[in-house]
Length: 158
Image: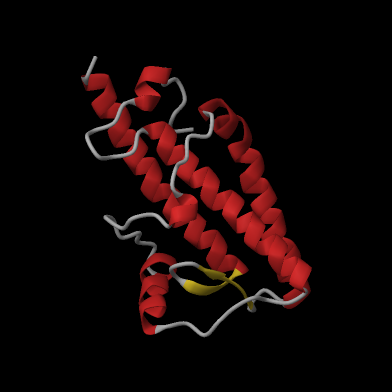
């Protein structure tokens, strides 16, 4: 994991106005738990919960899912912003949440088909199971790069 071996001080270090590594990991954790909740609500509804995509969503989906590029500088949706969860809890549970999320996606793909749009993403609109996985891969890679930059800067602050 990108934060392995970081001290509590290094995990908490951040440039002015930016997230620290612990907050970045918490943000990722919140996106995984949010996706789990969305797929659980979908399962309770017994059907995909999607709306027609807007042009903006189509372009965002093309960039992120199609081209594998996560544009920077966008503010995270409120539900995915760090809120101070204990770092130990987040680090202890994040791998389990990824597996749980994958399982939720798989169950709905099995039920509705691998090509079915299953659930709306708050920014990208309706996504299939494979597109949800690609989003989380691209999103995670984007933030891991941030963590490595924070790690390097925190080490230089010593």
